[in-house]
Image (cartoon, rainbow, N blue to C red; front, top):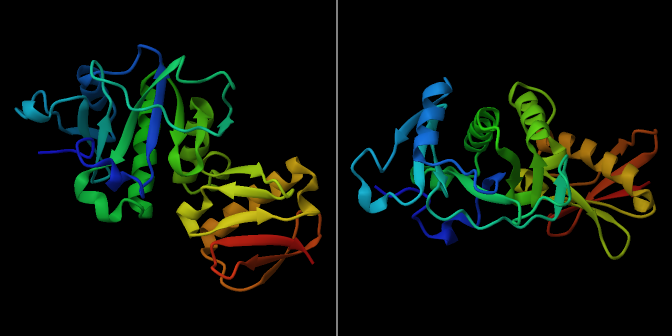
Amino acid sequence: MKGACEISLVQRADAAELTLLFAKGKRPNHAAIKAAAAQIPAIRLSHDPLTDGDLANSAGWAELLRDGLTFDVCGLAPGPAIAFPDITSRVDLDEGASADHMEAIAVLPGPHLTSSARSLPVVRGMLALSCDLVRHFDDLLAVSWSPSQTAIGRRFFESVTTAWLKGGAFPALGLTAFSGTPDGAVQSLGLAFWTGQELRIEPPISHDKVAATRLGTRLVNRLVLAGMVTADERILGPDGTPLVLRPSLDRAMISVWRE
C-alpha cells in the first residue's frame, strides 16, 4: 500500500498542502504519531507501515483517519524532513522563523482522495487534523498553507481555524494573504483555491495598505461564502464608500474600485 508521500509530487501540485513546522530536531517519529492518535479522541492511526508489515513503504509516513477521511502524514523522523515550504508572508510569527530553525512534515489527503483533494470536506478535515496535532505537540511552532504561501503561528492558527470549523468567520488572514503590486494595488494570494478568483484592491483605495488589507480580508469572508463573481457587484465599504467588484474578462481576478 502506497501513501500520498510515495505518489508523484506532480499529483500534489494542484492540491493544498499543510506543512507543520517543528523546532529543529523535534519532528515526531512513528511512535510519537501513534501515541498522539491514541490520546486524541478525534483521530485514529489507520495505517502505520512499521507495524502493519508494509516495510517496503515505511519511509517516514503514516496514515491518520479523521471524520471518516484518511490523511498521510509525511516526513516523520528519523527519515528526511519534507522540503521547507515557500513562505512569502507570516502571521503571528517571527520573521526569523526559517529552515535554519525549523523542520517540516506535511499533511496530505490520502491517495483515494486525489480526485476530491480540493473539496471543502477534505480540506476542512485536513485543517481539523492539523489543529489536533498543534494542540498535542508543543514543539509544533507554525503551520504553512501552500495556496497562500503563508506561515501561521501555532496559537493563531489553532484559534482562527477552530472558530471557523465551528461555524465562525473564515480565517482570511492566514488561509489567504495580501501584498502590494508594482502598480500600487493590493492583491490576494490563495483566494483562488477557494473561489477560483483572486482579489485586487485598486488605487486609490489601496494607497493605505493597512486599510486595503483590512478591506480585503472582509471581502474574502464574503466571497468564500458567495462564490465566484461573474458580473459587477456594488457594495458599501466599511466607511460607507460605494465600491464595485468587477471580474476580469477571464474571470480570474476581481478588481475592487471606488465607484
